[in-house]
Image 1 (cartoon, rainbow, N blue to C red):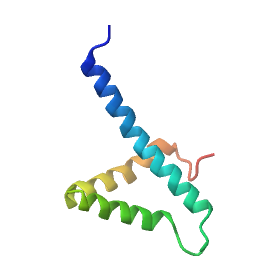
Image 2: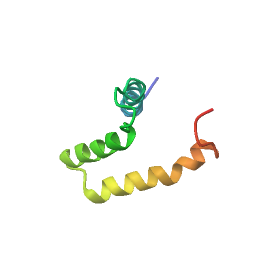
Image 3: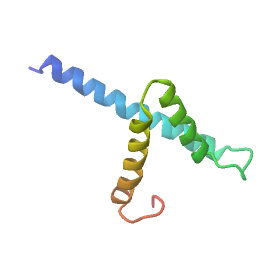
Length: 85
């Protein structure tokens, strides 16, 4: 039998990952279909995400720390590659 609390935790974790995945897929599609190729998509999107997080009451410290930590951890995830092969 499965513990109901574990089922709820698993569902939360799935929703958490799904939200990040959907955001990344949407940004990639916008990047591919950008009608202004001289205008970046990723930097303004991350900036907009940060301001949206601020508007949802995450603190400046939380947002800054999360972005710095994510950037610092990315080389480990990318295994030395600049772009996904």
